[in-house]
Length: 296
Image (cartoon, rainbow, N blue to C red; front, side, top):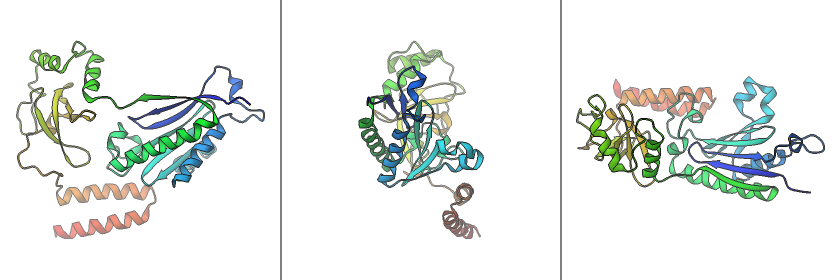
């Protein structure tokens, strides 16, 4: 029996692994008993995650809102590395996300942009292990080609690529071109940092990132009041001018006021209530009570 031909694709930016059937003949998508020919690959992928220790089952949201579709959707959690699975007539996909670090979206980490950047270090390692395991399990069962759609780029290359694709700065080819192009641009409203100092392209600036820790990098103007920050060879951020500053005595980790801590804890408590994680809600409430007593 000939193995089915598939393309296994994986992307980093918003981590996913998909298995797509190759070929244009719709009849190739069905076996003799009219099941999808790639269904066994889907089952093998979920079983591999279970063997790694992940809890794998139905997607609670689909089960609640569209139960008739529930058998085509799944959800898993491997010690903080969460994923949603979905199978269709010509492919199946696993989308990875996390809710360990605070989400920018009130509905949770699944709806964040640039998910990989928000992954804690250990979850990035766990993601790589999961992807390697899935590819090793699926590949022998089919005739597979493997495609990485957006492997991490060098940060300078990423920045110049972004400029080349922009209708505002498509003439720049080097970082020196970026700095030179600023001479013809009115930055009067867009280059004031947190302390009202004028920002110049190519200088060092500091900022607090979503993880609450102090970061630094070389800044280059993007659009309006947004600035690119090259932190190292692979890490690049995009921040508003008022988030940037020259460091004086700022702590390594951002210190929140008691009121802000309580506000964040209440937001997290609401999210855990929706997820029916009541043990976590109880511990959060104890922390809220402790902080509230400090204000009295």
